[in-house]
Amino acid sequence: MSTARNRILRNAFVLGIVGLVASPDAASAQAAAPPAINQADTAWMLVATALGVFLIPGNFAFVERLGRRRAAAAQPAITAPPPGHVPEEQHA
Image (cartoon, rainbow, N blue to C red; front, side):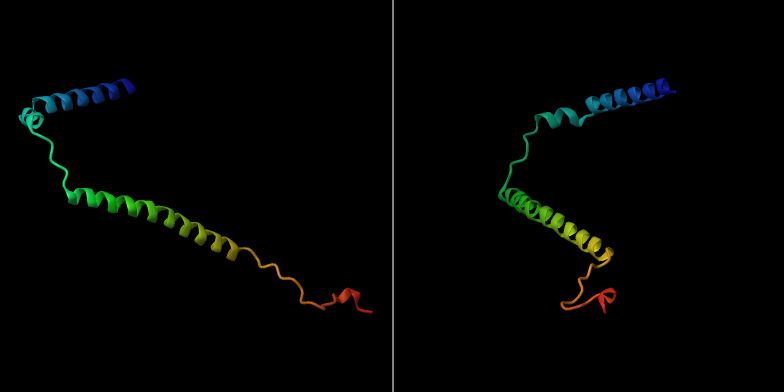
């Protein structure tokens, strides 16, 4: 079964490469100059980088804090007796 699957994948790969090489746009795409990078592209990349630098760690910290609060709320509260409290066993 894996031999038939390998043959299908190999044929699909070969046909895909042939289609890319034989396309009429292949020659014109190689001759065309790459587009120039303008100020809007640069500004957008700086904004996206700043958002990623600040929002990803901030989101991580928020989710961690939320998880700790839920874990703390799920545990029973341990309360200490008030000062001056004498357990009932020690009453004379």
